[in-house]
Length: 365
Image (cartoon, rainbow, N blue to C red; front, side):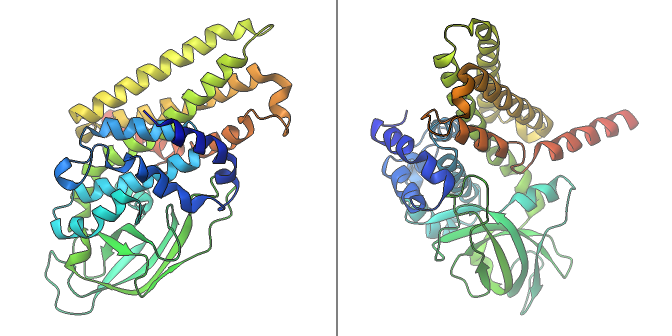
């Protein structure tokens, strides 16, 4: 699916993107140049058409060469999906063209919101009325709070971030799009990560930022978040799929003399990955994850395990060469990238807790 020129650029810059920001500013325009952000976006909205599965496969393709670039791709495409599912047509017209063209960065600052949806933590951004306020509007609201982690926050302020917001007056929480150059929004320095350092990942502090109805993605977060969760998580799983495919391909290429014993496990993991990927595509297509989010949670846990097992097989197949920094194998980078998979929101631990809670509730009833 990916053009040769893009694959070559990603391969040449994967280590640089993983370890620093030197080439981070090139990711969005290069992905946009190949029309990747428009996959699964209706032609009438300026996209290439197709399905969400097309976007998933493109994210997986990019992630197989650079998880950093794949992570940025996911953030951008997830924000696009929020706009596509928003009833606010004017907001969509405001931001979508730049997002598809790669001149505007979209940050999916909904990690806290997804934890809120699962009952794990409260919303960390709150709105206070400062004017005449309707029960279902965001007219005349001032925001304060913090987003501790968001990706694709391209400086200086060339981003728009989605945030779920509670209300001090007890009205329903909502989801808003906050421009990066808005007064009252402060971006931190890039977080000091051990990998994915070219992903423009930082924290946001919000104090006195004023918004109105024009900035609202959806007026009811409790309705909107479950609707976008399949896309949020489903597209995110492209990172797992791409990394596992790359690792298994590398392991297969290196499992030569003396390592024939790895043939069986490699085939087993390839089969498991193909089956999980097919299940994900089917679920995104037929909408089953809307009513059965636990099925998506279990799929996420399964793909995490496949990624970890694939990296172990690549290590065994590579042998001592994998431990040499001067070997151009890409293993050390993939090892660091794989460490990110269990902790990206919703994390493995959070999903295990959610599934355990659901099982307990079923038993109790």
